[in-house]
Length: 300
Image (cartoon, rainbow, N blue to C red; front, side):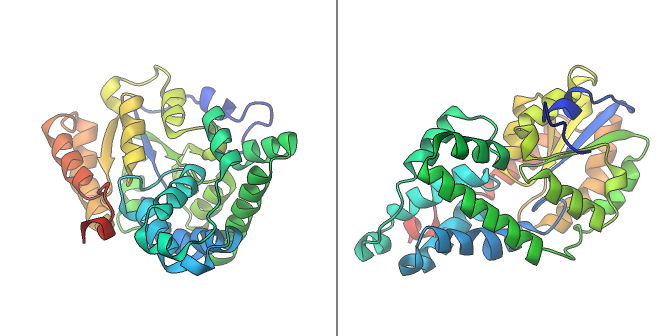
């Protein structure tokens, strides 16, 4: 499952179907209850540390949690998520009153405009090539985040009915992990809970976007209504739509119930051809209402 050094997407391009169906499953916050702990204990404390936000730490935490966990940007890539957090933080009245020196992130913003594979290796290479101080700091930050994750995030089991769903898919559908998390962390987490044997491929951030994961793996091998993305974030839904795949939402805050519904109802419907249409639309409509664009402090 390791990526090919010369072409990180080689495993996707060479993917061969074994079954008539393909199911892509997101990992953090979807299969595993790791999203909250990673952001609250690993990402956000390091944002405050590396970007010197101690004077507004309360608001930085609240803003970063909203962007990454509770808004319609939930699941955003870590680097655009950092920019979105700083931008929203800079607009808050409480922050403006304290006059902190917020980072401009100019170098990171420019990199995000010219780079499509927003992963650590690409950032590391660009930081070395350009000597840009913003990219160097972003790299230092994300490497600290990854160290924190490796030290803190252990023994977090999959949500109920994840294992049962994977077992039910055996011999019926090819399964791949579709995630923006680094591949090494994904392999560690899926192996830790003895789930790695249930998937044909683990596609992490090094292999490109989730849309690329689904598109390259499917590449005309499956019927249009035989590819399903299971995810907990609007980005997962967008990837499903962009790749012409079906979508099953794991509702934030109702993950266990969502997986039970998938196991008992959604999965059988997907396999018997009755999932697309009214049934899926109802689930997606409810999912989209759970994640607002406006933060609660603007509604007060």
